[in-house]
Length: 464
Image 1 (cartoon, rainbow, N blue to C red):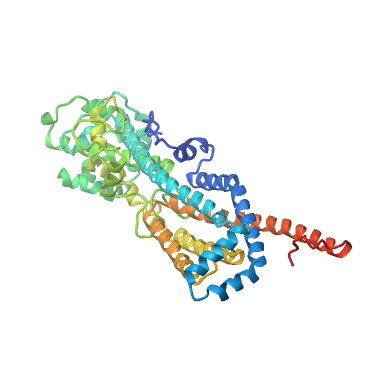
Image 2: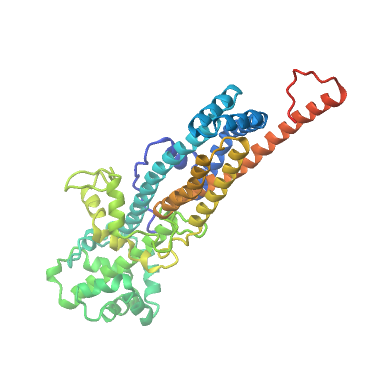
């Protein structure tokens, strides 16, 4: 394939999560599944912390049940002074071994993971988008090199033409041209394709199809190949050509541009990362965004991470270090639009990146997690007064709204992380609660047996 040239290496971002996603879990081909597996691994690794939280909450629940009589006495004694009542209740709970911090540690760990993952996946998304563009650009350049035409001629939007047999891959081009020249209709379809029609208008060739049909009559029909065409025009000064030959040479260069865009499309199919219904993991799962960003969006993102030079000198991306002109062409708007033109005609790859499915899942799972967590905290006695209940209601809606904003504005990769993390949190929550209940049930069963078959020690504290 023409696009299989030596890939230009783009330096990957540094950082623990970036390293894990890009390198350690590199044995998983799809980045979406890499993120899912990483989240599962982390949740299992941190599951002892969840078990510790459930154990402490169950202990708090027992303490709350045992302190009910003392709590009611405090309410009667200090009911008129809410502040003093709350202080006395906390003192009583603390003396009995009640732990307020048991629920805080997992929350702190979750918040740290959330923030660091958000930062890391923004960095990974920018890196992947830039690397994806570089790979498409490589395919575009390689195709031009193998066609004998000068790559800079098109990226500089020049009407001049330059052609050489150096690096020519005539057999591959003959195969491609055989499909283009299968009939006059197939040639006209290629000429009128949206990605190259404007190019023909730009160079003011009045009848491109008729001009290019010369290749069939003067080369194909008489047994000549594309290599013969290049040899006939190699090194010829543009100014020395007749008007008909100048149109013919420029027309063929534009046709080779169409071939380069075909190879770029194939490179994109190999380079871009989709996941289930999402066309690009590096773009939000929303219907109003395209899988491939336009130049303005792409440039803003790449500038934020220092991939594009802000002046006429410098190469912050550290690619094409042996060819400064190549890097300068890479970061031009015209080049970006030429390289991605063919991709933008394929709706299955380009339009409507997602359908808000991940967004809905994030909000729904967040609400469910909040309801379960608040129910457990109420049961354990960690939430008692009216102020706490008011805060619970605020948190019940604030968290889903906050995650909704993140899901709508972040890459699908981060939204996928939030969904996978929420699902794993619910699963681990269920398992740890089951284990704690099982342990607690065994403990209570032993206490009942002591009551039935032995003397009751008045000093024993038995939970009824």
